[in-house]
Image 1 (tube, rainbow, N blue to C red):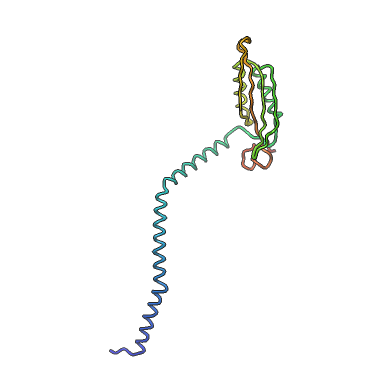
Image 2 (tube, rainbow, N blue to C red; image 1 turned 120 degrees about the horizontal axis):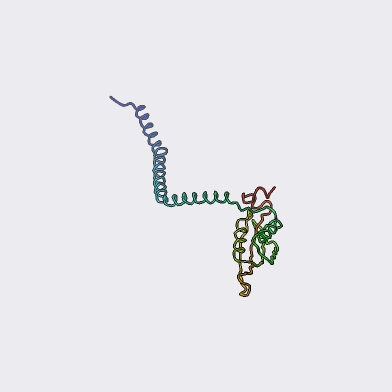
Length: 191
């Protein structure tokens, strides 16, 4: 069987087209596929080595969730306006309930902050240690967030157990549009 010249040309064209396909299409795609497989293998190795970090992040996420839940469960509130009058009345009533004498309550000027404004207060009084301790418990149990910054107790040896106390504390309020956006300001005070 003899191959005709036209058949030979057709065969050469088919071989040339197969070579062009292999050189221009299949070979670059094969190389690209190999590079992608190498990148996938490297990524899987990196993921496997980052597994302890992933577990640490999961643990931190759990801790943040618990802290957020405890924040929402807190009874302390930060009003959206300076409601110092009601706090001063509550402090004065608490001192009277605890039997403390020579009461002096001073509200100092407001210290503005980025998220919250701070109102420092000074309480001075005298009485028995049990009354002073009772007052501190009442201050801590107040529905408004109050931080004790300093407590100074002095006793007069001639007064038989009477103690003079100076308590420095501060309370906070959030101007409208600052912390209320973060859910830290109580709903009842922002109405």
